[in-house]
Length: 254
Image (cartoon, rainbow, N blue to C red):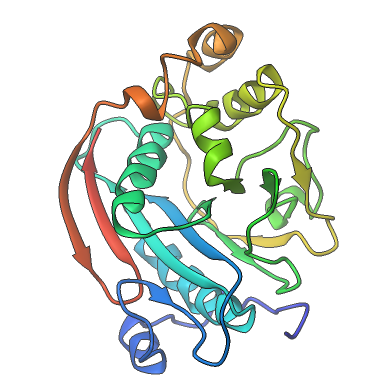
């Protein structure tokens, strides 16, 4: 463990070089050979058209996870087509397909544009949900508001199912993470937040995103929808599942 990490976003991240440097990784999965790990962790990255971000993220994420000696598998869940983005559906689909392929204890949903800056922020399983990205650089390394659970969020497997996963109704950017906070509150489920001095993440630069104009109205009805709107009722199709060595690629139509 090294503690604070300097993330250099100006260094070209080459996936082929990364593959050569990690011969023990396959389908995005790795486990320590010199000990029996306590935790099996699925990391799901909701994704579309962000390959430069993914390259940088993987360059730092794999070594961090291996230093922490966790048994992990990374899944990149990509929304097919050019229609409106729906992060909630992509994350739910990623969860369903990951559960078919990997017997994990907890699941971490990880935005592709966030790179961890401190390996004391442990990607292990906890007894309750944990908001890991408490201090992203885009927010001047502070937590923007008290119910924030977006960015990098860690769930025990049974808790994610109890919450019925994420809402499927948030088309466009914004709202699905706040809806998750409302779901936890309605279910009387506590969560912890990593202290900001170690929950630091580099936010990778991206263009403007189309905001969801219905997000506030949807949030008002969060509690009423929860039982029937989520991972248990997700309409999607798995178009392909392929081995990219550094991750399992799931292409889904939502």
